[in-house]
Amino acid sequence: MTELTEDGGELRFRGGRLASAVPIAFFIVWAIVQSGVLGVGDTTGLVIGMLVGLVVGMFLVKGPWKNYADAVFDGMTERVAATAIVAWLWAGMFAETIQVGGFVDGLVWAADAVSVGPSLFPALTFLLAALLATGIGTGYGTAIAFTALVFPAGVALGANPVLLFGAILSGAVFGDNLAPVSDTTIVSAVTQNADIGGVVASRLKYALVAAVLAFAAYLVAGQAMSGDPVNAGTVGQGVSALGLVHLVSIAIVIATAVAGRHIIEAVSWGLLVSAVLNVALGLAEPSAMLAFRASQESGLVQTVDSIPVIGAFVVPVAPGETAVAGSLYAGASGFFPLIVLVLLIVAGAQVMQRGGAFDAILSFLLDSVATTVRRAETTMVLGTALVNAMITINTAAEIAIAPYIRTLGRRFNINGYRRANILDANTSALGYIFPWGGGLLAGYTSMQSLPQEYEWFTQAMVVNPASVWPYVFHGWFLVGVFLFAAWTGYGLEYVPDRVSEEVKRV
Picture (cartoon, rainbow, N blue to C red):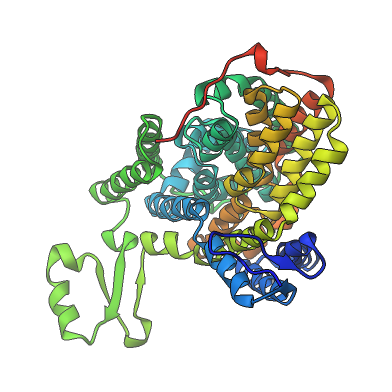
């Protein structure tokens, strides 16, 4: 009987090390059946799948179940999960606040003014999403903001919803892969003993090739898949360009992030500016951003309502309709099921690590498959794909497989820049392709609130996570570019070809 040691030792399972992958494997099968086979896009349903998977895994443990439970708790407290959660919460509040300020109406007005039709809209969306993601360094935040703001504008113009969602995710992939301030960029560089600046410069030749191909694909697919404007004659009537003032809010977020400020600080400044613009320009009432819907029968509510500063946030309602509401509330609360899901998935990954499933898989690849430089680089690409299929948070997946990439690369004298590029490209791309990936689900969660935001936006326009994966063109092309590079030697550098030095994130 083996116990989990106090310093985080191994768990042993009936069936060997691979049995520790049962919780994650069970969840993946559940997600495929729920979303892909049955067409049920329900994040809370995925939470149940992961919970059941963790319960099933517990019955396979040798030794005290307490050790297994400790591993689950340790996984749920991992910093990588908290990083994604923070990005979702802040980006959700920011996107909702801009949305109530009429930014979508402004986009519809601008698209009509410059004659951007439904066929061109997905390609343009890809470029703009890539710009934002590169500037702020978070693909998750970009997926949330663009799905809440740009997606409904494109659908209203007649762009295909599935293709448009794929374009948003592709832009998020581009920024996650290339942004110097992105967590995936930093982790890939540091774990491979390479400097961040050199890594970013060396990956341009891969990212830009994939981006050009993706842009062309969105132009062609946009032409073939575009439809008619939604509710022609009503959508777009009376829209104003004034909502475009929130481009200032977005610019502040980008500029602050590029200046080296933390993403929380950058988005918080954008959030503050957007709220001030909403009130100053009459774009939205304070209660549209934060409202305490309190009982009108309360004497205290009637007193508070007479005080302008406080009363602006208090909305008297019937006793049975009390609630907290507004863009801040909606922007944060919509991600609560996804937050729980991510914590549970990272817990499942922790079980896999302590149970040895990761080591078993990667040792097989290291010892039996990677026998030449070409095969070594190919297994790096495929190995990162395998890990990303099991861990939905790309940074967490990157951390899990980074030692394998470093060991294999050093065995064949492959330069740290090349190793970091292979590691980052695949973890950035696949986290937005798999239907249970964190980036895709973040955008999908933001999309679920749109039928309540717009009368014309029907439930049929909400994209099922299982249907978008073929249209994340930049993600697929990025993986394809590195498979091509592995087999042809394109961009291959050995250690003597370039000197890199280790850096630390501060």
